[in-house]
Length: 81
Image (cartoon, rainbow, N blue to C red; front, side, top):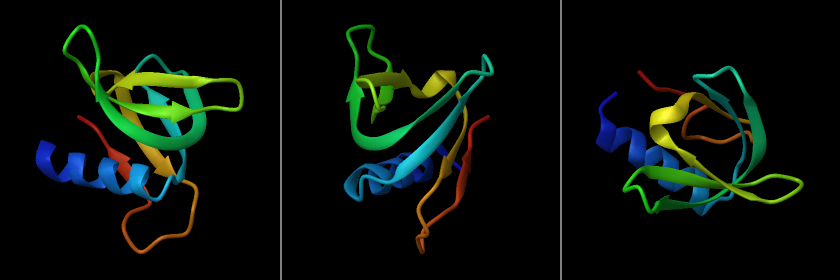
């Protein structure tokens, strides 16, 4: 999957505010609702996730996988290289 296709799926996650589980390359797991895409002050493209405690920016370069926890017709798991 190329970067453009991956970005399209992330936009879908945010548009529908899907509940997602992100596994970071560090091994950390983040659960929450996908809310928006963003480019931070360091010019990194990322996703905003509302966790139970706060909104969190996660740079795409830090992500290993995104699993969608909602039943949907689009995709269940998005793998990053």
